[in-house]
Length: 115
Length: 110
Image (tube, rainbow over all chains, first blue to last red; front, side, top):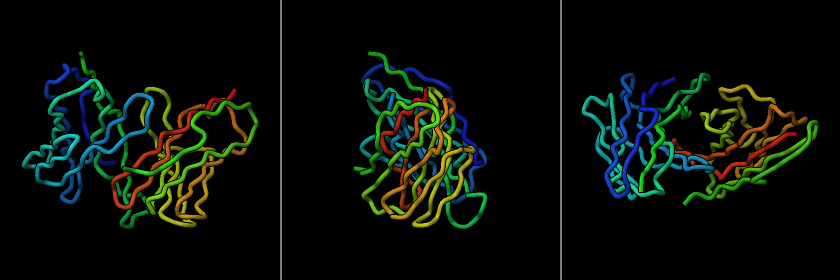
């Protein structure tokens, strides 16, 4: 399985920026970097994904290192509702081959936001 | 906004009962997935489907079975529920790689 490494937990204060790191040194040239988050008692939700260039959407920004071996999810102003487990994921090919891929969720980073 | 639904949201049932967890999506996605997640633990893929009449087992072995007769439906069935099946079951769908998740079903088997 494609591997990512994230800190187990991080803490932030409300209305401050949060930078969530992810290492993916074995990434291949065509792998997108996906970020999901899971709020307490809910299913995961898509946050953002990117290939090489930095990406922005209404939820967050994704900064990708030039060598693509690491990336950082940026929440520009954390709110209490951003407290969640954040997953950084690379796609894995199915063992059966073909052009289909799966996403393997690891342990993620538990983000705590202090008021 | 994703439109994927799961019912029931919560289920408490006795050992030996047959149960079916429903999952439906209105986005026309070909790919659908079932994950299992225990409290505070990782999600584990237990079933997936590339399209109608296509189902495969996932990474985590599960005694459950699935079917995909229609694009929008991907029900999961346990023929004989046991306490070890107590968990949260999450359904997802995708067109390409981005997956959209339902709210989950919390199952408690007594």
